Length: 498
Image (cartoon, rainbow, N blue to C red; front, side):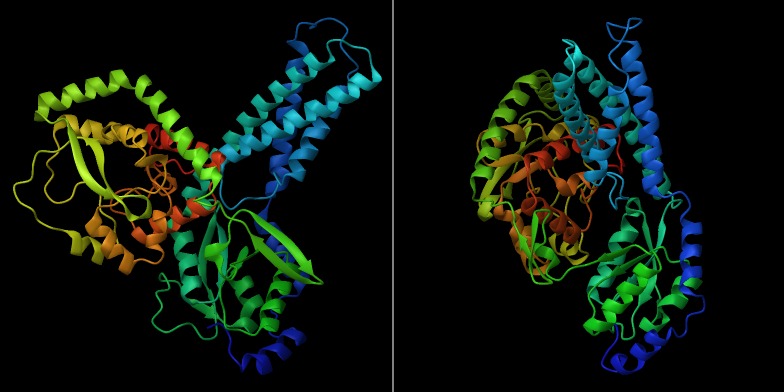
């Protein structure tokens, strides 16, 4: 794919000799820094400093002791220093690939609370002040509010810029094979990641591979020339058949030029967010831990699902009754639409929805065509038979509310992969990589793929990828994020900040 056997005899001497470097390394680094401008760490650190200064000042002047002699003022900057240090230790000042507002807010809250605990402990040891805990907790509350608001605004602004291509870093993909093309496709589909692929570095691109319209710019010995000519700001190493030593030198040269480097690992399908790194000498061993769909964690999840479904059903009873009455008036009885879907372990069940469409005049059978174009079923298939009431129910997702009863019956979960009809399941099992692995868990009312915009007639391969990511990285926090993102998607469709 990238560079074959001849590479070891031709490219290596040229790399060692620095040929054909059109600019010295120092000049390339300087050019890169000028293009990059104010770095993400400096921008976020400055923003946090301003937010903390405002928050802690207001906490001092709005508390019950405002206007009186306050505690030694040294505690205030100490709190700020500890909070910023904890944020730095948590990696909060590294530029992320994905803009995740909820994770950022959680990190801010944890850092502020830990800072408060440390400051309270120190104040208890060195001073006799019965209000020290109250004062510090007030500082933490103001810090969380102001840091959270400033970070949220900053991420929203960055997401807006990325979406419109104003903050995209020009990216070179090393390896024009299947994985390299998949990487480029994902970045092109999701500009909110902030990386815009402009081409590949590959001596022997795989014949017939769809390269998303991007050119192969050269081979390994052209690295610095390509970086200079195309203003490269990020390099991604995908799978390659190049010799190990050549790839290592390319990575090292990118680091010397102060270019961020990302690596797509082997067996990436099984790499989760829970990784432990051990070393045998200099050889790293990655222990990959995944959530066990048969383990106690998912048993707790399904128990909480039923409790939450019961509470939501009670809360939503007026909406359920109004929706049922509207469907009965517009379409008559029955008000519920029952459709066979496939759930956990491939077991079929009847999924419930409010009826939203008039009965079809004939069965136009679209299974084959939908499967052929790689798009999943959903939305309006064939003739638009929605009633006015049905269109409103679908737009607001209220037609999905009866699935709470599926959750209470143990057939579904609140969050999980969306279930498909049996005829599609059989086709997609044959056509889509890892499709059957979605059935390790219960199907959900909403899911990780849905909040990523993969609803209706969208790529089934992408849906499967996100669904399996959810299963293997599951946590209660991830479920909470999906619930919040589902609400955000309903209220403000097209939101790109997680």
